[in-house]
View 1 (cartoon, rainbow over the protein chains, first blue to last red):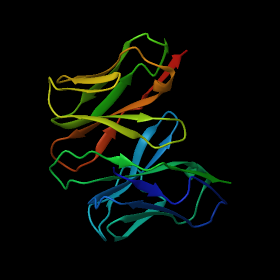
View 2 (cartoon, helix red, strand yellow):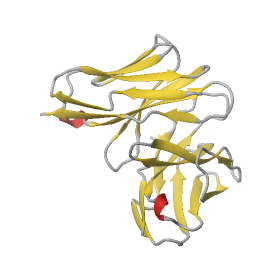
View 3 (cartoon, rainbow over the protein chains, first blue to last red):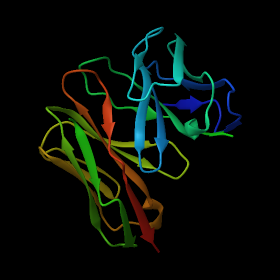
View 4 (cartoon, chains in turn orange, green):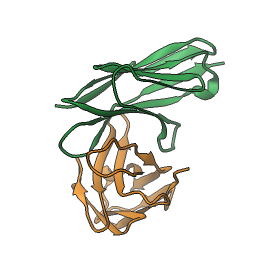
Length: 115
Length: 111
């Protein structure tokens, strides 16, 4: 079974803090993704990565950065947290490279609250 | 522009009352369509991938079907534990490998 884990289920931070969200997958997947999910807006892609040290912007990258130093680990960084970044953050991974159908498997999510 | 629309937004059924959820999509070419189940406060759980029109897949009380414009998730004789949000997502041919998600259908099965 595919397993995607996220470092925290719940996180409370203050405005201006630097926040790290970590995601680890154990299936040797090439691709990893970070989404945020908000009521009424659905899932929105923040960043994704096809390989170690590679990253590509998704639909809403502003205010976020990512790091992928190892194949199994993909970190999302909020450089200076703001209240509008309060959300559920979901990490996903998938096996196949480009030009192939690509089932994504999700982690349990991190509920981040920025005060 | 590629789009995925799910309907209804919410659905309440009695236990045992079968129904269908709809996912309509507009893409230049379909590489794959995905169904997920999401429980409150948790990440989406993968259910099915469909690749081409006419394809069907089943898992317990769920059956997913695909046409050139839409997919249906049929729920037969549902139980309260089937209550969840069901998400549909589409991956288009060409371009990047992004997956476009619908906003989901919240399903509530009453005992």
